[in-house]
Amino acid sequence: MSPTVSKVQQVEVTKGEADVRLDRWFKRRFPSLTHGRLEKLLRTGQVRVDGGRAKANTRLEAGQVIRIPPLEADAAEPMAKKMPPRVSEQDLADVQKRVIYKDDDLIALNKPAGLAVQGGTKTTKHLDGLLDGLRFGSDERPRLVHRLDRDTSGVIVVARTAKSAAVLAKAFQMRDMKKIYWALVMGYPEHPAGTISAALAKQGGAGRERMEWDDEEGKSAVTDYRVVDTAARKISWLELWPRTGRTHQLRAHCMLIGTPILGDGKYAVTSPHADQNMDLHDGILSDVADRMCLHARELVIERPGRKALTVSAPLPKHMKDAFKNLGFTEGDANA
Image (cartoon, rainbow, N blue to C red; front, top):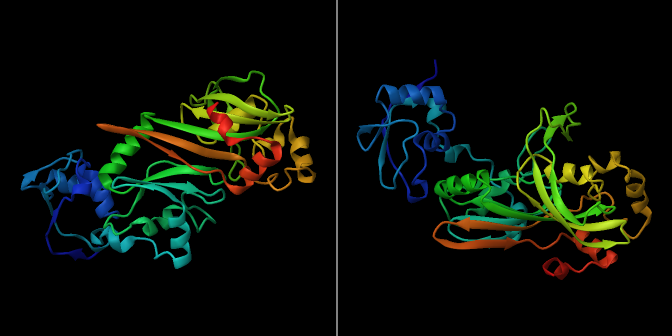
């Protein structure tokens, strides 16, 4: 059996933890404590809030005091001691340089293409591992509330408090965010504007997963789009507004309407434009032929009782160079 920590703890709920569910509060403070163990502690009255019994879904208020009974040593280790190793000074400088907006609730960054949002097998450097560098004096570590593909650049938001994380996560879940993406695609769609509605399901084995159109097994996926400009109908600039948030949604949808995203090594290579993608290596777009041209340009966040927040991210260098070579002007998106 694991040794126990005999001391009973009395922990006060911070302002940033207000309105967070009790079970989620424990998950953040004591990540090794299992849900089953917590439920047992709640049923037996060993965990109390302001002296009274509580349930897992109890919403906390700032200033309340939570009684934490003796826990097994591995579960009692607080979250602060389980944080990732301190980021290097260079990584700290790099991630802070990416900040494009900051207030008491959230931080918006311009994520570079090539940086994964979360870690995984063979992925040691990722945004989640760099979030300690975005504390800016806060006791709380920022939290991810949504994702971008590794090779997609642009606006990504992290919450600065537990309360803000809950509000933002719900907003993303309920689609109370307007997300605008810019993409350079091969070819020209059949219609200059429209809606792509094609359910998507994951196909392929490990390392070869792709999202494919599947009305029977797939999940609903809807994207609005318009052509902003085109270069002889060989390369087009699309503005995309996803209504849903499926994995690889924009990449798969662009492929399905016959205009795969430039530099998309997963979806463009199997399209009718595959030869054109290869030809780009010798043309004016040779610098971007191996880099995906999909950018999360703008995010509009509705905030109850406050003016909506609009955050825009400048284009990455490879897309900026492509725009210049193609004669596209960023201001045309507002025309």
